[in-house]
Image (cartoon, rainbow, N blue to C red; front, side, top):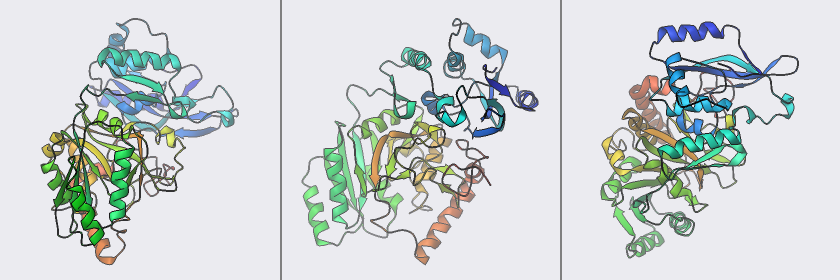
Length: 441
């Protein structure tokens, strides 16, 4: 199927047929696409991820050219005629019983923009129209009472998942050692700029010796919503958090670095609303450096030594490649600097690996373990905070720290091998060297 104004690429039919023949269970196949300028020259390739439910809710990243089995098509049409280009696709992938989707990472169609390419918003090809957004919203509301959709930044859709009338208790875990100014700023920002109504703080002291820090920790022990745990010894991020999780009263936990600063009141509501979804594991936020540039908008496996932060150093008002800074989506991993997950799910996969990953990659490992257990990792840009990255510990630049980092990376590469090489939420046509969603060399 394709839309007027789009052209099937040379050789695409053969690729579609080969895929259908090799996998008799696949229901719908889509590929990458690009634009044609007035002279017919190809430009603006859109290299897409594999099926990504939450990204699809934000934007039609699949596009209008795809192959679908007749049986699935007939099921979708049983609900009545489709009057909108995207309505049929929504029925096929969102409302049909567990369809199997396959992404082929090749340019299989070309689009001729309705206006000159140099005047076209780069997101225009993937944005849902207002009518399609209403159709998507109506379908979701029939399935999930209380869910809502609004048009957000850059024309992308923001799906707001409902919280129960009594939101679950969230235990925010903050490891610390000295650096009392960081801890004070972190706690003050969360207390004054968070509208979530049901919070517990667990501060894990990893052997503070500074007099001002010890005095402040003692004052926190008097606060009814704060627990202070003592955990001296060598820094082991995994051990500190596991200790706190076991002590947490909340059904939901949040891992929060002591150099995190809350910026807007709804950040935790947004993250918890995803974390309590039955098929979601870890939820990560959009994190900014103090100068407003992107520090974290999700993680991709296979960049650099092991993982990378695509879109790093982009401006916070940019939409990113295919809108992926500003779109809620499934990713392979998110950083543990600000991560929310249900306690039961965390414990079901053994928490963070304190034996093999005391410092680095423990968050990636957690997300991959949750994924292996059937839970998706979600990145949401609608929770935005500052992250003063590694200020409290410094960067891993000394020889001993660098050797430990390499040792933990080697462990991850052995453990997850194929998974960290082939990230389904990235694309093999994109760089494995840089953190910028640029094209592969």
